[in-house]
Length: 412
Length: 146
Image (cartoon, rainbow over all chains, first blue to last red; front, side, top):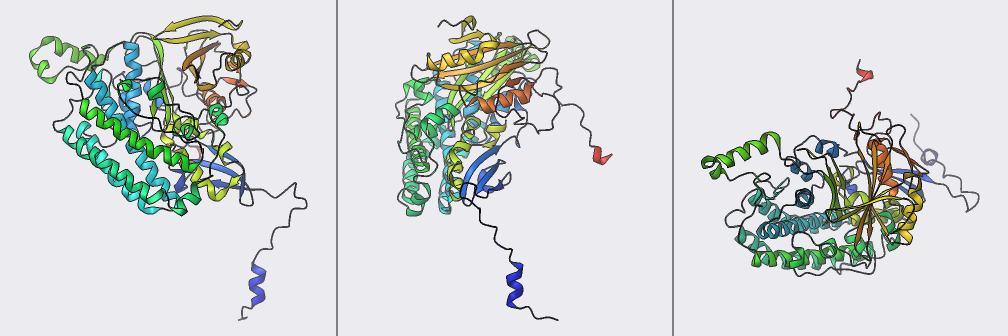
C-alpha cells in the first residue's frame, strides 16, 4: 500500500476558481436559504445571489404554508369562521379574532358594550406582549444571545396561562367573537392579570439588562438592516418597522377601534432605522402595552360582556332552559347561522406586526362571500429584497429577524 | 375629486369606494398618488361574482397617512380573459399583491415585472379562489404511483 504523502493532500483540494478577469464582472454564486433554515422562523425560502460575502440580490419565495384559509372562510358560517382567524397569525391570535369580529360587527352595525371592548383591548395587548416576547427570544437566539430566550419564554408561559384561564385554550383562543366575547370572564381574572402586570415591568428591565448595552448585541444590530422610509411606505411595510424609522403611525391612535381612544399610551419611535432601533421600539411597546393592561385592569367597566343582539349572540345556557325564545334563537344560529346584510367593509387594526386588515364582502347570506386578509407579514416581507441588497450575508439573519414575520400570516 | 376614470363614487359604513374604468387604472392611480397623496397601497385583491357578468372586481385599498384617509378603488373585469394594467410602476407594493390575485383568480396584470404564481406551486392548474373551483380541489392524480 502506498503511503499517503503531502502531495496527495494538495491534489485533493480543488484549485481555486480563476480570478475574475475584470472587477466589473465578479463571479456570482446562488445560495438557497431555506425553506428549512432555522432562522427563517417557519418555511421561507430565500434565493441569494452572492458576490463573495455580499448579497447582490435576494428573492424571497413564499407559499410553503399556504392552506387556503380564504377559501375556507367561504364555506363556514360567520360565527364558525372565527376559529380560522386564530390560525392565520399563530402568535397574535386575539388580534386576528378582534379584526374579524370588528369587521363583521361593522356590517351588522351592532354596538358592543364597554366591558367587552375593554376586555378586548386588554387581551389584544396581552397577545402583543406574547408576540413580542417570542420575537425577542428567538431573534436574540438567532444572533447568539441564548439566555434571553429562557427569560422571554418564562413570561410567555404566564401569558398563555392567562389565555387558558379566559378561553380554555393556550394558543387558538377564539375568545373574541362576533358580538362580544366567547365566555364570561372567569372568576379571579383580576388577580391573575394583576399579579402578572405588576411584575412585568421589572422583567422588561431584565431583558434590557441583558441586551441594551451588550457589546456583541450592539455590534450585530447597530447599523444593520437599513431600509429607507420612502421604500418602506412604497413597499407596504407597516408596524414597528415603520416606527423604528421615525414615522409616528400607529392605527391604535390614528384610527382608534374598540375604545383605544380612552387609553393613555405613547407611540414609541426611533430614528436610526436599523435592527437595534426595531429592538428598542418593540421593547418600549411592551412597556406601553403593560401600561394599557394596567389601565384596563383598574378601570374595567361593569356590565354586559356581550351585545344585546339575540339574533347574533348565542343565548345564555340558563335562559335556554326557561325561555322558548332563547331556545329558538340558539337553534337558528347553530343550524343555519345568522344573516349579515349585503355590503363590503375594510377593517384594520394594529397587530404586533403592523396593519392587519380584513376586507369582507357579504352577499346577505349566512356565510361570507369573500374574505381577504391584508396581513402585515406579507406586506413586510415584500421589502426583504430591498433590505438585504448589498449587505453582508452574516447580517442577513439579524435583518431577517428584525422584520418579525410569521409565515402562517404571510401564506394564509 | 374629479377624474375622467371615475364611473361612480359610493359611501357605505363610513368607507369611500370609487368604481373606475379598468382601461385607465394606471393613470388614475398615479393621479391618486401624486395629487391626492395616497402614498400607500394597502392591498390589492379581487372578488369573483360568478356567474354574473362582468365577473371579476379588482379591489385596491389605498391609504393617505397625512390625512388619515382610506379609499377603495374597484375595477370590473369580464370573466373571459380578464386583464388589467399593473399598478407596479405607481406603488411597488403591488408586486406581490397582483401576483396573489393572478395566482388565486387568474386575472392577468399587463406590464407586471414578474407575473408568476406566488402561493400555489408554479405548475398548479386552476385558480383556487374562483367560485367555480371546488373547495376540495380537483381530484389529484399521482402518475408515478399508478
